[in-house]
Length: 526
Image (cartoon, rainbow, N blue to C red; front, side, top):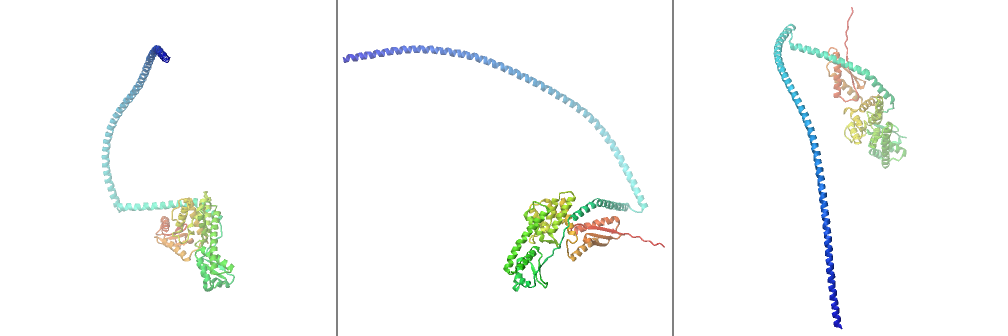
């Protein structure tokens, strides 16, 4: 049973395999047929697509060819139009060239004709030149003959006659020039002097102030003569301590109830005066107390200096001045020039400068500023070398002052030339302030020497008979010999003397030179 079953199973399996193979072959055959049909359909589609593509390509090529032909036709038409325009332009250029050639030909012909005319003219000019040369030679011979005859008749040579004529012409010219100068000066005086005098008079009249001459000593009143001994101290230690602390000289003499403090430095002298007055009021006078009081009063003086500067700037209505410059302005309160207080002088110059500027209808602010700072160099100590002009310029440059102020400082004593109206006004105001009666004092000896020096300069000129310096040296009157100096020469003499004084002397303001020529004629009636 088992064997039969195995055989049956085997036979069944083989039959199944065979059936499967049959089915496989059958399916494969049908699939192959189906693939063949599909392939043939694909091929047909491909042939159709290729045919359509060829037709489309042919149509595109045809259209492109048509467009290219149209573009070529358009470009050819454009080129033809351009060629036509160029040909027209070439024709116009050729016409212009032809016209220019014709013009040049005509001009050449004209030049040829002119050249011929010029040659003929040159020939005529050459002939005329020869004729003129001959005439000149004849004229020279005649002139020489005439000169010889004139020399024989006049009894003098031509050179001497020329010299005489030249001298005569020069003298006439000098007289004419002198007369013209006098006329112009008179006209200028008529037009300017009245306005100038009016402006100065108004400025001086508007500014009036009391002025007290400064000195180099201060007097301290004492309550009694017994205080002198306390001030001197044991073996003079108190007075030595005061002098060492302040740098002044304390003079105690027979003057009752008074002590004299002497010093050229006004700051030191004022410090010593205040310190001595404080010590007298306090009653405690010894070296230690003296040092404390002097230190305290030095600070007080510094505060006064600052306040004086601020008050001066406020009085002038000025702004933007550096605080250090304000302090130096206040320090001018303790400086003098010819015994004139430097701060009062600067304020006076500032007021006068501003008023003169107002009369001239210009802004007075800058004139006031320059007037207030024009002597700022005098506020420096003796430790700084140089003139007060140079020191003042350096100080103002350091604090970036305006060019007008710097030039006013440099030119108010004519160290430099004034280049602005403010400098001129400051110089005039400085002269007015210094020349005012009572403003300054100087030694009699130096005053006399200055006048004698001015007179000696004028006396060195030829023809000067007498010379007098008047009005404190502001005017020089020169009397000349009428036989040696003519009226025309007198004008030149005045100018020569003025020029010599400008070169050899230094002075503030102006000096008027007046030349006097007097001719007297007498007769006796019988």
